[in-house]
Each structure stands twice: as structure tokens, then as C-alpha cells.
Length: 195
Figure 1 (tube, rainbow, N blue to C red):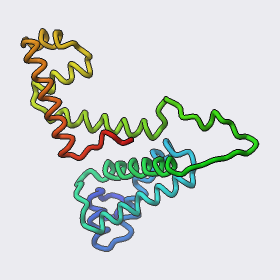
Figure 2 (tube, one colour; figure 1 turned 90 degrees about the horizontal axis):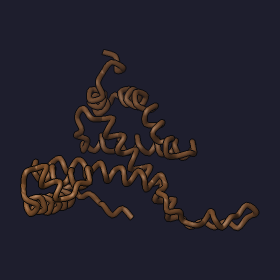
Figure 3 (cartoon, rainbow, N blue to C red; figure 1 turned 180 degrees about the vertical axis):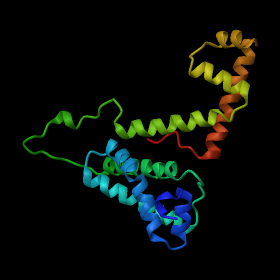
Figure 4 (cartoon, rainbow, N blue to C red; figure 1 turned 180 degrees about the horizontal axis):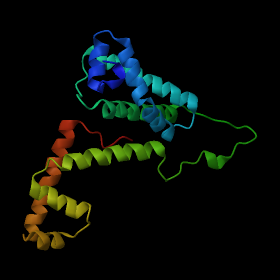
């Protein structure tokens, strides 16, 4: 069977058995989507090329180490790697001190703005997604109160009426939801303080 018709998982298996062509097919299959994602955040083609290359260097290292176990989820796994490498680039740029007093120098270019930049937006999207996923692991009553309070912005009186419980019970469920959510965040090692 030609490699083009194999699943991602089959291509990975073939690559690990020494078939370099299988990796090439895998890269070609997903390169457009991955590269477009990189360009969405990186406006420099050379930097985007570097990130794209780094993505697949990391993919190859993980595959060869035998640590890849995302069966059937190759593309989402590669997109997470891509996302993390883009964030690393933004962080590195933030740490590099720059000063330019040339003719076009404008003091207002150096003032930090309050509106979030692309990196901060990406980080917060990731955090919100992680927390939303963790909320689904809470007991049903706790999940319900937490969603009503934070997503529907209901008062505890409204929550109590909606769920046919006392305000104290609604408050208690919220308290336990937050305690359990905190435990889940620690277990999954999610860093809510990226900055």
C-alpha cells in the first residue's frame, strides 16, 4: 500500500521501522495547516520557517524516544507543540532588551499598552480551554453552580432558586467546586500565572 493512503498512526509505525518516506508523507499531509497556524501569529516568514522546522525536529525526537502515545491524535498533538513553540518565541523576544534611538525613534513605541498582545491572548485562550476542560471533571452539582455563577453570571440567590436549594447549599457547592478545581489544576500542573 502506498504511504499516501495510510493513517497517521500507520505512517508513524512505518517511520519508526525505518521508512523515512513515511515521515515525509506525514509532514506533507499536515504542513499547510501547521504553517498557516504559525503565520497567523508570526508575521515573519523566516521565523515561521524556523518554528515549522523546530516543530518537526521535536516531533522526530519524541517519536524516536518512544514517548509518543497519542494514538489517533497526531495532528492535535503536533498543533500543541506548534502552539507552545510560538509562545516560546514570544517569551524569548520579551526577554531580549532592545533600544533604538535612530531617526524614526518614537517614545510611544516603548510604552507598554494595556491591551493584550498576541502571545498574551494565546496564553489566556490556552488557560481558559484547560480550565473549561477541568470543570467537566467536577461532580455535576458543583459544575452546574460554577457554570451558572461564572458563565451565566447569576447571583447565588438566582442559582438557589434555579436549582431548588438554599443559598447556603449553593454557596457550599461553589466552595467545593473551587476546592476541587484547584486540586485538579495542581494534579494536571496547569500554570495559571504565566506572567
